[in-house]
Image (cartoon, rainbow, N blue to C red; front, side, top):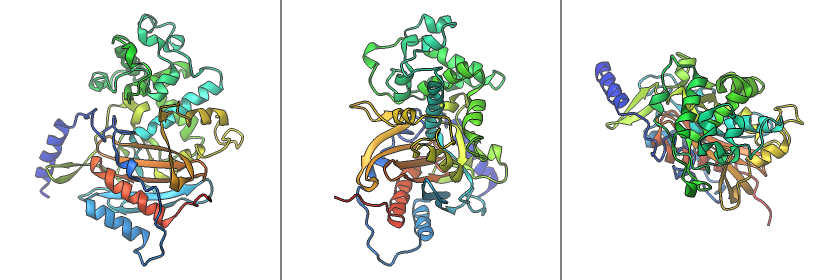
Length: 398
């Protein structure tokens, strides 16, 4: 493609790329708006027929859907993960996508923020029913707002009534300290009315998780970014983990995000403003992400010396209230192929997509990730079907 033409297309995409917060697979839809996850097989087809290799079959899915790159695989508590990558880091260049390349995790960041909240609960610095006014008692805007009564539990479950998103562009100035910017996001919320009828009703809210990030900042005295590095990335040795587009942190050695514009696959380095971080800006390699995901498969991470979070706290973050299906950065469900309860989440900033399922009884997980946005939902579901066929879970005995 002519480079000038590609640049023009990229500029056009950039001008109209303001995140469509009501999108089915944008950040707002990152966890539940996209319906592809509902199509995951409820039964496996393990019939021993002559089939292409896992890599060949994955490549077939990628090419059929015109994706630049695709990673899929499975893991358990022990041993090396089974991961395969196909395609390219950047659609217009020959560099192959590697299974150890960092990928943008989008809204799958929310579980990490919830885990940090859980650590504060275990330390006695928070309770699930702690209100914002309890944390920000010295902030008149919170004290004098009905939003001061919003609880940690409500924010974790998207039932506080908080809207999906504020106008994030108002909080994007790089000259303003990131903690101050998150305070401004919270103040934006406190100046809005809180509708009583919305309290207790599910509304997926990136804003709510950004506020949770600021709760962490208030109680820890540092930015959410510093906190997640100190409490999660470093102890779990997630050396590839960072924030925003992977190419910014790993220039020349990371995939690019992509968007389908005018029928063409355009590479870019676009992400949402850093202030949104606690709701969805982490990137990491699949191997490093799995180090974190294994914590949520463990019976007792604190007892195992992995992370200081109690089994009871993790159980709370994995258990939805009756009549609900979301808590702590996870959609809670049951799948026959998993032999019981599963945790699921997906994420996208419209330029990347990832999805993960954790089978709690079998202590196993499956995941897929792509360096492209909305067009990746269906092929990633197909990739997970393929993983289940190639690496079948034990079926529960009747």
